[in-house]
Image 1 (cartoon, rainbow, N blue to C red):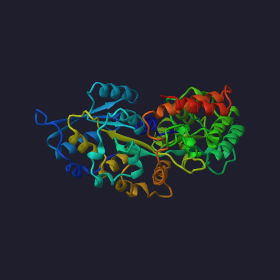
Image 2 (image 1 turned 60 degrees about the horizontal axis):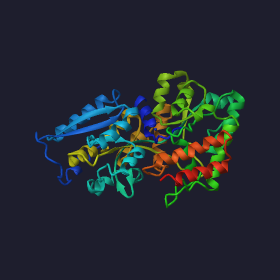
Image 3 (image 1 turned 120 degrees about the vertical axis):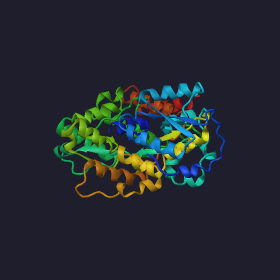
Image 4 (image 1 turned 60 degrees about the vertical axis):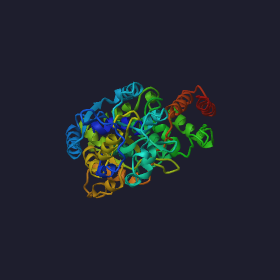
Length: 433
């Protein structure tokens, strides 16, 4: 099940078919003019996206042409970067002080650079009346230590995509809504069909879905002092849940070695009953595995005792060393305004991050005979009202996932008790500096 945190694990599939922008540019025109003048009289803005070509080439070409026609002194150079190359490329560019002016990232990775003061302080650049147009819980995801380092763009919330045939064979009449119900369903499916219910990765550098599941089960990952908060009764219970599933043979052994891509492959091959992903991935299933797509349906995201649901966020950030901060902010706000976000959301089957765009009937009205994709879209939009970024925005959140996953793996393999695994993970986190 996906954590559309590595919101590009989510994004790659959004782009392929997998966990948006409007009219605020006029408000951006009220920003103070601190940009350095270009010697040619034209401010050239370099804009990086992550693996959005060729699916959305026409969309961006038209968007850029419209922006340039409305802002004669600004030219946009669009560079699309492969997902796998983005982190190294932006790190190199920022370190070498040759960054793009606007870059598409996710809050998790962007926050690591925010801790190095790499981004422009947007609180000083984006007026309150413009900021208030975005979903407040989503804007908060791109803040660190009370400072805004990114502008929200498009979103996804996880759904449960499920194989109706497997549920019928296992005698399951109700789609699981909690992890407890999922464990019961997993045992029934394995006994009746010989198949696994689902695949979820425990690879430290991959999806953070398991980390998010801890939060959904009521675990505090990090306390107010930045120390491990998961060394608790709730934390031990959550560790025990995953260890038990693995030791009972209800999870494939390769959950320890393969990433979320394996979850997608297994579901499309008809080897698992459930897949946690965004509704946009239904298009990919229809293309790659039409027989599986025919018996697939969507249901709300599985959660824990808290009832919390995740949201994966893609944002845009502006490097502090940009030569043209005001022009960069103006373009970023144009890219993410109501009109443009709604248009992109419809093309990519994702969700917008502004209130007005999300209120569009496109996200609410579907017929009784609507497709699984259409139904999934409305479920996702409804979930978004209460959804939140479950992993705390920290410059070192990758180390938190590493500590928990490595010790969870050790417990799953019987190398440590659950209690020892939790304690060791806490020590590893608390001694990271």
